Amino acid sequence: MASIPIDNIVKELGLEVIHLKDHQCIDVDESDVNRPGLQFAGFFDYFAVERIQVLGKVEMTYLENMDPKMRSIQLERFFQYDFPCLIVSRNMDIPDYIIELCRKYDRWLLRSDLSTSVFIQRLINYLGSALAPTITRHGVLVDVYGAGVYLMGQSGIGKSETALELIKRGHRLVADDAVEIKKVAENRLIGESPEIIRHFMEIRGVGIIDIKSMYGVGSVINNKPLDIIIYMEFWDNTKEYDRLGMNEEYTEIMGVKLPKIVIPVRPGRNLAVIVEVAARNWRLKRMGYNAAQELDNRLNDLMQKNRE
Image (cartoon, rainbow, N blue to C red):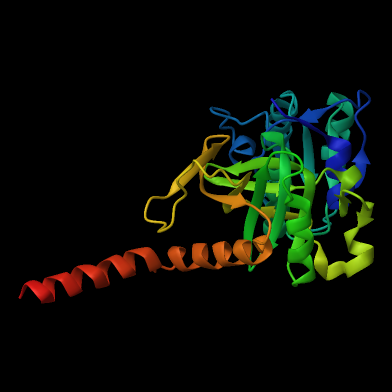
């Protein structure tokens, strides 16, 4: 199971550390959060103790209005659970009784200056991405007309050269050679480049080039959902390639099915233009228009008229 150190969360979201747990090697492995209002009221059934606990204005107001004796009992019970950390939002003043209990039970206590809803949204988004199942695959990922196009094929087929031509035509590079793919939802994959090679590209005969420095910040993007797979292979005269596009192929990655197009490669073919056309055609299909189906309908209508 993936996990992330609390230190990373503190740095990423700019949190203020009020109390630091003595044993600092605490990892978070749950992307949801919990607001412990029910626990303060005494209901501990189904308490999501594995989640980060967030206190907003509602919870803090409720605590302030509680009978001090009952509040002490419920908070003692709450802090006995080994939750990852407690975060107070809206930059609110933290009562001494909470700070003392954090010290007593050695719990992380953090604070954010964001409103509760905004902070929770950012925290869940960050945890969802950081904890998502991840694999690394060979290929090139580019943003073409807003579609995440994943170029696959054997080494030396021309994936990087095709991506470079696409960048020259105004599209954006996400990752070259190695693509880290995260499953952030049931049917959604996000691709990005490993940090060490981000924005770099290898062109055989030239070497390593820096796309961001060469073509500007608008030529790169850090991550992109995978929408379509284009598999490049050397032209095989014995193979029958699809000429109509009536039958769609799919490839499954981490349990997610993605449309796949096989493009045969041979000298003289403008692969960048073909990739652009494939991306545009994919967008049209998503909007409900299928050119192959439209042609088939016209032919059927014509044959029907001839019979009449």
